[in-house]
Image 1 (cartoon, rainbow, N blue to C red):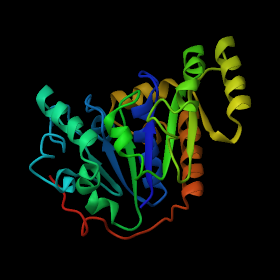
Image 2 (image 1 turned 90 degrees about the vertical axis):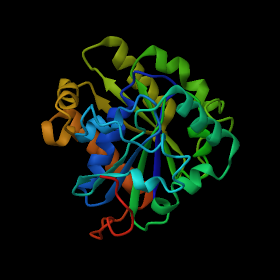
Image 3 (image 1 turned 45 degrees about the horizontal axis):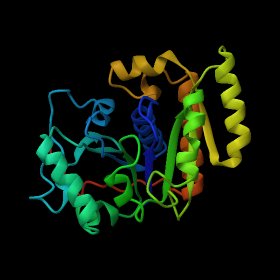
Length: 266
């Protein structure tokens, strides 16, 4: 059960889009993939065709349902989604309070999916440090930190290097890696930042995703970049990142059915 956490020290870097397309890419390769949204913006579901009006999710039901898998939506094929859901401010605060104070709260909620062999989990987190990211620390097999090819991202590297995201190293299993998003060879500053990040991070830079208008258009149509524009530069870059993730985590392609192991909420 490989579990990949996608995070960032700041918002607006395309983190959720990358998490969704990484999930799609791993599913296209044959893995059964569950995408989990820990961000109150509840946007991850939109990348999988869930209507904007569909407010279902696990957070509002997390106190009454110990097993969060009951809120999983089946998207067809190899993809499953566990949306954050539409919640009140009180519900959000109680959820985050439970994450912070109960060390077993997260594991209990995800117990069913954590124990399903071969299921790959991609979890999307809100930007910056937070209770969900801290609570996931012991369970995660890998963290992917998404940054932009700009000077603001360079200035935020110390937040990762000095363990300011969780108060400790991000990942003690397969480690944490960086993804540089929206690199634009037409812009001098973007080229310089990309070169700097490649030199500074070395093998910890898992991939660079070129700036590509197809990504925004795919988002608008609620499609993956692979379905909307399979020959695009972004599709190639993200697919390569997915292959590197699979290699590091030794993810095996399987044909088993997840439906028999998790109760879907449809």
